[in-house]
Length: 429
Ligand code: HAM
Image (tube, rainbow, N blue to C red):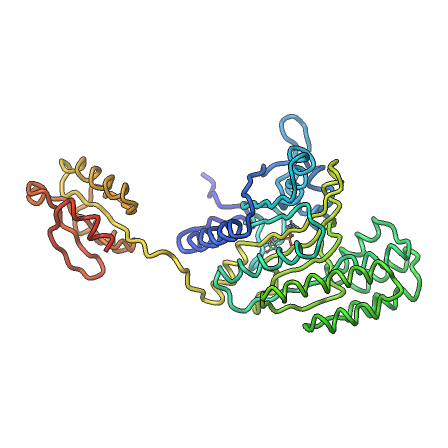
């Protein structure tokens, strides 16, 4: 027999790690509810054409692509946004906007596995579709801040930019859409020299190159100051000035909402996905050099899939990376203090009674595991200890004949005989 292992970049997530991932999922769902995002479920496999359309070279080159048995080119989704834009362009096209849509699940990218980088990735994804105003962008940022806080992360910050600043310059210089996207890809990888070479070969002016050089250097944490500097640098490019103003308004709204999040504005910041048209951002924590989340405004994607022009803004958070950050920061999970029980019949004839009592407890919302391995009492209790159960309910003939069982507090190592109808009160107290 061959030794079966998980594929490279794919992981079994067990025990405490699984608990942590589920905890983050719970927080992501809570945030979705608090902000009015409806959870929807979209397919893991979609047509390659749909997923690749605006994914950008980097993500596109890392997609898991295959032919299905009907010879169709399909792929595992590398993100949720394309599927959601498809839905909005088709099934939901006549529904009243805005849409606030939330998805949670796995996406797939053939990335080079390393710390915080996997091939099967858990994302929580939020899209706000319909509004074009900066309050929508502000909402996505605030929601992200809320999730990071709910996850218990202490030091996190945003890197923020605006694709419109860069695209405004390139469009005015008559650099084509395709070249613009290639330039953004290089800027995303911080290959600024190569990006500038491409701008030059696309026929842009020397003044444009000089301005781009200045923009790439323009960053800082004082929103007002950086945006003023950006506006000064791009003042001859009308669309870029409008974009900078939009960034200013968005960040002003975030700050005036009372949301205190540290931000670095970076004028040369670009993201790999090709559909962004406005504000873009990523979330970082110290000590981890990959982003915990990323998103931004994309006003043309629904149209690309045949829908009417529909502005939109969204974000996806990497649950695996949030878990990594929580471990690094030694975050304590704020779980409900739920008591758990194991039920152990002392002999075979009492199995039905064990099932009956366990059912009674579960009906009262107490999690119960029944001893099913037929082990001797000492072994069963040892195992219950290892599983960190709070109580063992031992069912013996003598006690049962008096309508009672033995309840053992596993932490205190104390036990007492308790009437069956009193068990729930005792366990929950
Ligand atoms: P993204 O930045 O490509 O954006 O991915 C979002 C997050 O997924 C990243 O910030 C990261 O936390 C996580 N992630 C991505 N690749 C990996 C990987 N190989 N291993 C672990 N985690 C990873 C999007 O997916 C956009 N759809 C976000 C969006 C929604 N924009 C608008 N709406």
